[in-house]
Image (cartoon, rainbow, N blue to C red):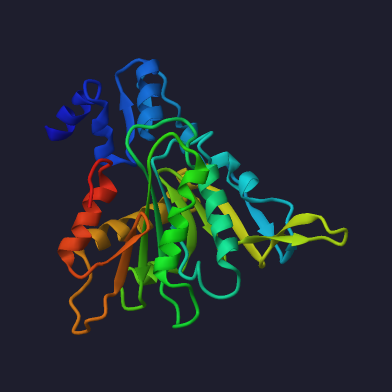
Length: 302
């Protein structure tokens, strides 16, 4: 009964689609109204008399890199799953050691900026767009402090020049966090896409060629695979569709934010949380549920 009423209410109150931000809405409405909902709220919305499943299909691309000059960069890698083809209202970057190890802070920020610039819609949306970074705290002295990370990532927002607010959240985990095991596989996720990255999201850097010209250089040997949620082979049960890992990771994040960290005798927080450049500790289930509420619903505040 609730589901039926919910669907029937959407044409009268478009904002309801934010209750299920990665839902797929097939409604008895005009193509113009469906396009308006999709544009304004970053969700897939189609009229029932013009349904098109192609928006959910994987483009079938794979980019392979070795250390050295790169033929492709984030604009080409992400082009076929970017805002040009897929609606979205949030972006999630998962990389355990994104800010650890070799590489300057400026270079990491360049990669993050270029990923965001290619994935965030350029048209106005209703409400704020959410960007979430899930990273881990490396060994002491092997990373920048979270205060520096949070401040500098949030400073990227004005340069994106988007006509809507952008909220930047960072979950900074210790290896004791129950979410830590899910940070090993590097990926970029939106509502309806997942890009799997073998080794590092800090994938590229500027370098000089033999003539002194600036070129893009891959920092390591890895494959980067931008994907929609479904493949023809997956739908025919010949293999798993990208939807499987997308759903698995999303469910892990939901569960973590809803249930919170397990109780511990240690006073050291297992996760430090940063929101728009400001830091707070996640010390109990109440705190994670507050994040959970805002993460799911567009208009909730801390």
